[in-house]
Length: 192
Image (cartoon, rainbow, N blue to C red):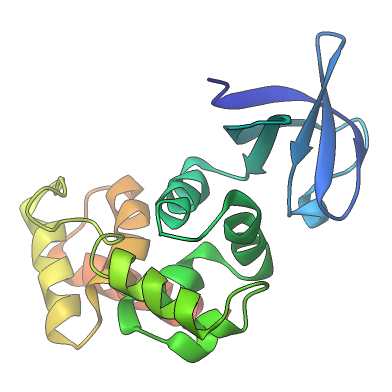
């Protein structure tokens, strides 16, 4: 299984990229042409899909997007092309939010997703895309206290999970400083 490819962008279009890796050109279905430029060196995370008529590589910006793709294709009746189209038409954080909130209208705006498929996505994935708080590693007590504070302020688990990784990478701070930094990140996410 090919899990990622690092190479130079040889050519790209609206829904694909050809990566040159040591003289071998890999054709990858890729929905983010806005991040590409010719001759650019890039790592693309991939999912190798086998069909009767051949193999396809689906590409993603990072491992989190790849994991969401894998979850989407586990939904009954949802194929890789539709799943990638969904990820190409919105940020993956927005897609997770829609699933967690049961927002059928948002999901129906995705390409090739009807009402029945949207409901099936919610049924199969709601509650499975956010980190299990009991298993999420907390770096220190101050950070843990700040995350609890954000929850007490009314922020949802998926919103807090979206920023917790960034907070964990920051230098150790007091709980109040973590809380302020977390609020800034949450506000910035809502503004985008």
